Image (cartoon, rainbow, N blue to C red):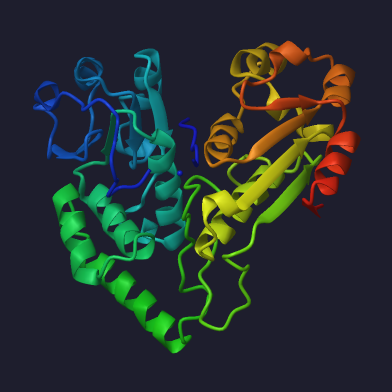
Length: 340
Protein backbone atom coordinates (compact mmCIF):
# COMPACT_ATOMS: atom_id res chain seq x y z
CA UNK A 1 0.00 0.00 0.00
CA UNK A 2 1.26 3.42 -0.84
CA UNK A 3 2.40 5.65 1.97
CA UNK A 4 0.86 9.09 2.08
CA UNK A 5 3.58 11.53 3.06
CA UNK A 6 2.44 15.03 3.79
CA UNK A 7 5.22 17.42 3.51
CA UNK A 8 5.54 21.75 1.87
CA UNK A 9 8.69 25.77 -2.77
CA UNK A 10 5.99 27.10 -4.60
CA UNK A 11 4.20 25.98 -7.75
CA UNK A 12 4.83 29.34 -9.26
CA UNK A 13 8.33 29.40 -7.83
CA UNK A 14 10.83 32.23 -7.71
CA UNK A 15 14.46 31.76 -8.66
CA UNK A 16 15.31 28.06 -8.70
CA UNK A 17 18.81 26.65 -8.50
CA UNK A 18 17.78 23.13 -9.46
CA UNK A 19 18.76 21.13 -12.50
CA UNK A 20 16.06 21.11 -15.16
CA UNK A 21 14.60 17.68 -15.95
CA UNK A 22 15.39 16.41 -19.45
CA UNK A 23 11.99 16.87 -21.10
CA UNK A 24 13.10 15.03 -24.22
CA UNK A 25 13.60 11.86 -22.20
CA UNK A 26 9.99 12.18 -21.01
CA UNK A 27 8.45 12.88 -24.41
CA UNK A 28 6.50 9.60 -24.39
CA UNK A 29 4.56 10.49 -21.23
CA UNK A 30 0.93 11.45 -21.86
CA UNK A 31 -0.03 15.13 -21.56
CA UNK A 32 3.50 16.17 -20.62
CA UNK A 33 4.08 19.79 -19.58
CA UNK A 34 7.16 21.49 -18.11
CA UNK A 35 6.98 24.14 -15.38
CA UNK A 36 9.73 26.23 -13.79
CA UNK A 37 13.16 24.68 -13.92
CA UNK A 38 12.37 21.55 -11.92
CA UNK A 39 8.70 20.52 -12.30
CA UNK A 40 6.98 18.45 -14.96
CA UNK A 41 3.39 17.19 -15.07
CA UNK A 42 1.91 14.25 -16.94
CA UNK A 43 -0.79 11.63 -17.10
CA UNK A 44 -0.57 8.04 -15.89
CA UNK A 45 2.76 6.25 -15.55
CA UNK A 46 3.40 2.70 -16.67
CA UNK A 47 6.16 0.30 -15.71
CA UNK A 48 8.08 1.08 -18.88
CA UNK A 49 8.25 4.78 -18.01
CA UNK A 50 10.42 4.38 -14.91
CA UNK A 51 13.68 4.15 -16.84
CA UNK A 52 12.78 7.35 -18.69
CA UNK A 53 12.21 9.15 -15.40
CA UNK A 54 15.68 8.21 -14.22
CA UNK A 55 17.20 9.24 -17.53
CA UNK A 56 15.44 12.59 -17.28
CA UNK A 57 16.93 13.17 -13.83
CA UNK A 58 13.64 12.99 -11.93
CA UNK A 59 14.23 12.62 -8.18
CA UNK A 60 10.69 12.86 -6.77
CA UNK A 61 7.37 11.52 -8.08
CA UNK A 62 4.11 12.93 -6.69
CA UNK A 63 1.22 10.63 -7.61
CA UNK A 64 -2.34 11.96 -7.31
CA UNK A 65 -4.00 8.69 -8.31
CA UNK A 66 -5.26 5.80 -6.21
CA UNK A 67 -3.81 2.28 -6.16
CA UNK A 68 -7.03 0.90 -7.62
CA UNK A 69 -6.50 2.88 -10.82
CA UNK A 70 -3.43 0.79 -11.68
CA UNK A 71 -3.98 -2.64 -10.06
CA UNK A 72 -1.27 -4.29 -12.18
CA UNK A 73 1.44 -1.71 -11.49
CA UNK A 74 2.97 -1.07 -8.06
CA UNK A 75 4.22 2.43 -8.76
CA UNK A 76 5.45 3.09 -5.23
CA UNK A 77 7.77 0.08 -5.32
CA UNK A 78 8.95 0.70 -8.88
CA UNK A 79 9.80 4.33 -8.19
CA UNK A 80 11.51 3.51 -4.90
CA UNK A 81 13.54 0.69 -6.44
CA UNK A 82 14.75 3.14 -9.08
CA UNK A 83 16.15 5.40 -6.37
CA UNK A 84 13.49 8.10 -6.52
CA UNK A 85 11.26 9.43 -3.75
CA UNK A 86 7.57 8.54 -4.05
CA UNK A 87 4.77 10.65 -2.58
CA UNK A 88 1.08 9.79 -2.90
CA UNK A 89 -1.95 12.03 -2.39
CA UNK A 90 -4.97 10.21 -3.89
CA UNK A 91 -7.50 12.68 -5.31
CA UNK A 92 -10.95 11.21 -5.96
CA UNK A 93 -11.98 13.45 -8.85
CA UNK A 94 -14.02 16.49 -7.89
CA UNK A 95 -14.72 15.06 -4.44
CA UNK A 96 -11.03 15.32 -3.64
CA UNK A 97 -10.73 19.01 -4.49
CA UNK A 98 -10.88 20.21 -0.90
CA UNK A 99 -8.94 22.94 0.85
CA UNK A 100 -7.34 20.27 3.05
CA UNK A 101 -6.00 18.45 -0.01
CA UNK A 102 -4.78 21.72 -1.50
CA UNK A 103 -2.77 22.34 1.67
CA UNK A 104 -1.44 18.79 1.60
CA UNK A 105 -0.47 19.22 -2.04
CA UNK A 106 1.29 22.47 -1.17
CA UNK A 107 3.37 20.64 1.43
CA UNK A 108 4.31 17.89 -1.02
CA UNK A 109 5.46 20.43 -3.59
CA UNK A 110 7.40 22.33 -0.94
CA UNK A 111 9.06 19.15 0.30
CA UNK A 112 10.23 18.41 -3.24
CA UNK A 113 12.08 21.71 -3.05
CA UNK A 114 14.45 22.27 -5.95
CA UNK A 115 14.78 18.62 -6.96
CA UNK A 116 13.53 17.58 -10.42
CA UNK A 117 9.96 16.45 -9.74
CA UNK A 118 7.17 14.79 -11.72
CA UNK A 119 3.55 15.36 -10.64
CA UNK A 120 1.00 13.12 -12.31
CA UNK A 121 -2.46 11.57 -12.17
CA UNK A 122 -4.42 9.62 -14.78
CA UNK A 123 -4.55 12.39 -17.36
CA UNK A 124 -2.98 15.47 -15.65
CA UNK A 125 -6.51 16.87 -15.08
CA UNK A 126 -6.32 16.47 -11.30
CA UNK A 127 -2.82 17.94 -11.31
CA UNK A 128 -4.07 21.07 -13.05
CA UNK A 129 -7.08 21.28 -10.73
CA UNK A 130 -4.95 21.23 -7.57
CA UNK A 131 -2.46 23.66 -9.07
CA UNK A 132 -5.29 26.07 -9.91
CA UNK A 133 -6.81 25.84 -6.45
CA UNK A 134 -3.41 26.29 -4.83
CA UNK A 135 -2.73 29.33 -6.99
CA UNK A 136 -5.95 30.92 -5.76
CA UNK A 137 -6.11 29.76 -2.14
CA UNK A 138 -2.43 29.82 -1.21
CA UNK A 139 -0.88 32.30 -3.64
CA UNK A 140 -3.82 34.68 -3.86
CA UNK A 141 -4.19 34.67 -7.65
CA UNK A 142 -7.47 35.87 -9.11
CA UNK A 143 -9.96 33.24 -10.24
CA UNK A 144 -9.19 33.64 -13.94
CA UNK A 145 -5.44 33.77 -13.40
CA UNK A 146 -5.60 30.61 -11.29
CA UNK A 147 -7.68 28.83 -13.94
CA UNK A 148 -5.14 29.75 -16.62
CA UNK A 149 -2.34 28.45 -14.42
CA UNK A 150 -4.23 25.21 -13.91
CA UNK A 151 -4.88 24.80 -17.63
CA UNK A 152 -1.17 25.04 -18.34
CA UNK A 153 -0.70 22.07 -15.98
CA UNK A 154 -3.47 19.96 -17.53
CA UNK A 155 -6.77 21.22 -16.08
CA UNK A 156 -9.63 20.17 -18.35
CA UNK A 157 -12.82 18.40 -17.29
CA UNK A 158 -12.55 19.44 -13.65
CA UNK A 159 -12.52 23.15 -14.48
CA UNK A 160 -16.24 23.71 -13.71
CA UNK A 161 -15.80 22.13 -10.27
CA UNK A 162 -12.68 24.19 -9.58
CA UNK A 163 -14.55 27.35 -10.55
CA UNK A 164 -17.47 26.40 -8.32
CA UNK A 165 -15.21 25.66 -5.35
CA UNK A 166 -13.22 28.87 -5.67
CA UNK A 167 -16.35 30.98 -6.20
CA UNK A 168 -17.86 29.49 -3.03
CA UNK A 169 -14.72 30.28 -1.04
CA UNK A 170 -14.75 33.85 -2.34
CA UNK A 171 -18.41 34.27 -1.38
CA UNK A 172 -17.86 32.92 2.13
CA UNK A 173 -14.86 35.18 2.61
CA UNK A 174 -16.88 38.25 1.59
CA UNK A 175 -19.76 37.31 3.88
CA UNK A 176 -17.32 36.86 6.77
CA UNK A 177 -15.92 40.34 6.22
CA UNK A 178 -12.46 38.98 5.46
CA UNK A 179 -12.03 37.46 8.90
CA UNK A 180 -10.12 34.23 9.41
CA UNK A 181 -12.35 31.17 9.39
CA UNK A 182 -13.26 28.11 7.33
CA UNK A 183 -13.13 30.13 4.11
CA UNK A 184 -9.46 31.05 4.48
CA UNK A 185 -6.53 28.95 3.42
CA UNK A 186 -3.48 28.62 5.60
CA UNK A 187 -0.51 30.73 4.60
CA UNK A 188 3.17 29.83 4.83
CA UNK A 189 5.03 33.13 4.30
CA UNK A 190 8.51 31.94 5.32
CA UNK A 191 8.48 28.22 6.11
CA UNK A 192 6.41 26.43 3.51
CA UNK A 193 6.20 22.92 4.91
CA UNK A 194 4.73 23.53 8.38
CA UNK A 195 3.33 26.12 10.76
CA UNK A 196 0.53 27.47 8.59
CA UNK A 197 -1.14 30.69 9.74
CA UNK A 198 -4.28 32.69 8.93
CA UNK A 199 -4.33 36.35 7.95
CA UNK A 200 -6.18 38.72 10.27
CA UNK A 201 -8.19 41.88 9.44
CA UNK A 202 -7.05 45.45 9.96
CA UNK A 203 -7.04 46.53 13.59
CA UNK A 204 -5.76 43.20 14.91
CA UNK A 205 -3.03 43.47 17.57
CA UNK A 206 0.23 42.70 15.79
CA UNK A 207 3.85 42.41 16.95
CA UNK A 208 5.70 45.68 16.42
CA UNK A 209 7.72 45.58 13.23
CA UNK A 210 10.29 48.06 14.59
CA UNK A 211 11.25 45.95 17.63
CA UNK A 212 13.41 42.86 18.02
CA UNK A 213 11.51 39.76 19.13
CA UNK A 214 13.12 36.78 20.87
CA UNK A 215 11.33 33.48 21.53
CA UNK A 216 12.53 30.16 22.91
CA UNK A 217 10.38 27.08 22.48
CA UNK A 218 10.62 24.30 25.04
CA UNK A 219 10.37 21.11 22.95
CA UNK A 220 10.14 18.14 25.30
CA UNK A 221 6.96 16.47 24.08
CA UNK A 222 6.93 13.64 21.57
CA UNK A 223 3.41 14.53 20.43
CA UNK A 224 3.14 14.81 16.65
CA UNK A 225 0.85 16.52 14.15
CA UNK A 226 -1.32 14.68 11.63
CA UNK A 227 1.66 14.98 9.28
CA UNK A 228 3.86 13.02 11.71
CA UNK A 229 6.15 15.87 12.74
CA UNK A 230 6.78 17.06 16.29
CA UNK A 231 4.17 19.59 17.39
CA UNK A 232 6.81 21.75 19.06
CA UNK A 233 8.78 22.01 15.82
CA UNK A 234 5.55 22.87 14.03
CA UNK A 235 5.03 25.56 16.68
CA UNK A 236 8.47 26.97 15.88
CA UNK A 237 7.59 27.12 12.20
CA UNK A 238 4.30 28.78 13.09
CA UNK A 239 6.12 31.42 15.14
CA UNK A 240 8.36 32.25 12.19
CA UNK A 241 5.37 32.43 9.84
CA UNK A 242 3.30 34.55 12.24
CA UNK A 243 5.99 37.19 12.59
CA UNK A 244 6.60 37.14 8.83
CA UNK A 245 2.87 37.61 8.24
CA UNK A 246 2.97 40.58 10.61
CA UNK A 247 5.74 42.21 8.58
CA UNK A 248 8.57 41.69 11.07
CA UNK A 249 11.84 41.50 9.15
CA UNK A 250 13.83 38.25 9.58
CA UNK A 251 16.72 40.11 11.21
CA UNK A 252 14.37 41.37 13.94
CA UNK A 253 13.17 37.88 14.90
CA UNK A 254 15.21 35.39 16.90
CA UNK A 255 13.66 31.99 17.57
CA UNK A 256 15.35 29.17 19.47
CA UNK A 257 14.19 25.59 20.05
CA UNK A 258 15.49 23.38 22.86
CA UNK A 259 14.96 19.68 22.18
CA UNK A 260 14.88 17.28 25.11
CA UNK A 261 12.73 14.58 26.66
CA UNK A 262 10.75 12.63 24.07
CA UNK A 263 11.83 15.05 21.34
CA UNK A 264 15.55 14.31 21.76
CA UNK A 265 15.87 11.81 18.90
CA UNK A 266 14.78 14.44 16.37
CA UNK A 267 18.23 16.02 16.77
CA UNK A 268 20.01 12.94 15.43
CA UNK A 269 21.64 12.90 12.01
CA UNK A 270 19.88 10.93 9.30
CA UNK A 271 22.34 8.05 9.58
CA UNK A 272 22.21 7.94 13.38
CA UNK A 273 18.41 8.09 13.42
CA UNK A 274 18.18 5.13 11.05
CA UNK A 275 20.77 3.19 13.03
CA UNK A 276 19.03 3.69 16.37
CA UNK A 277 15.38 3.72 15.30
CA UNK A 278 15.44 1.76 12.03
CA UNK A 279 13.53 4.38 10.04
CA UNK A 280 13.99 7.82 8.53
CA UNK A 281 13.76 10.89 10.74
CA UNK A 282 10.32 12.41 10.04
CA UNK A 283 11.49 15.77 11.40
CA UNK A 284 14.68 16.07 9.35
CA UNK A 285 13.22 18.21 6.57
CA UNK A 286 11.50 20.60 8.97
CA UNK A 287 14.62 20.97 11.12
CA UNK A 288 16.53 21.89 7.97
CA UNK A 289 13.86 24.41 6.98
CA UNK A 290 13.88 25.95 10.46
CA UNK A 291 17.65 26.26 10.40
CA UNK A 292 17.54 27.86 6.95
CA UNK A 293 15.02 30.38 8.31
CA UNK A 294 17.46 31.39 11.05
CA UNK A 295 16.03 29.36 13.93
CA UNK A 296 18.63 28.24 16.49
CA UNK A 297 18.18 24.59 17.46
CA UNK A 298 19.67 23.04 20.60
CA UNK A 299 19.48 19.55 22.08
CA UNK A 300 19.93 18.64 25.72
CA UNK A 301 23.28 16.88 26.21
CA UNK A 302 21.98 15.13 29.32
CA UNK A 303 19.00 13.74 27.42
CA UNK A 304 21.30 12.52 24.65
CA UNK A 305 23.50 10.60 27.05
CA UNK A 306 20.52 9.23 28.98
CA UNK A 307 19.07 7.84 25.73
CA UNK A 308 22.37 6.30 24.68
CA UNK A 309 23.13 8.72 21.86
CA UNK A 310 26.58 10.19 21.26
CA UNK A 311 27.05 13.92 20.81
CA UNK A 312 28.81 13.13 17.54
CA UNK A 313 25.57 11.68 16.21
CA UNK A 314 23.76 15.03 16.34
CA UNK A 315 22.80 16.84 13.14
CA UNK A 316 25.13 19.61 11.99
CA UNK A 317 22.28 22.14 12.18
CA UNK A 318 21.58 21.36 15.86
CA UNK A 319 23.89 22.50 18.67
CA UNK A 320 24.44 20.41 21.81
CA UNK A 321 23.69 22.22 25.08
CA UNK A 322 24.91 21.15 28.51
CA UNK A 323 21.30 20.55 29.43
CA UNK A 324 17.82 21.75 28.55
CA UNK A 325 17.59 23.40 31.97
CA UNK A 326 20.70 25.52 31.47
CA UNK A 327 19.87 26.29 27.84
CA UNK A 328 16.37 27.54 28.66
CA UNK A 329 17.68 29.57 31.60
CA UNK A 330 20.54 31.10 29.60
CA UNK A 331 18.33 32.05 26.67
CA UNK A 332 15.76 33.68 28.95
CA UNK A 333 18.58 35.64 30.59
CA UNK A 334 19.42 36.90 27.09
CA UNK A 335 15.90 38.25 26.69
CA UNK A 336 14.15 35.30 25.06
CA UNK A 337 10.50 34.82 26.03
CA UNK A 338 9.73 31.22 26.96
CA UNK A 339 7.04 29.51 24.88
CA UNK A 340 6.26 26.43 27.02
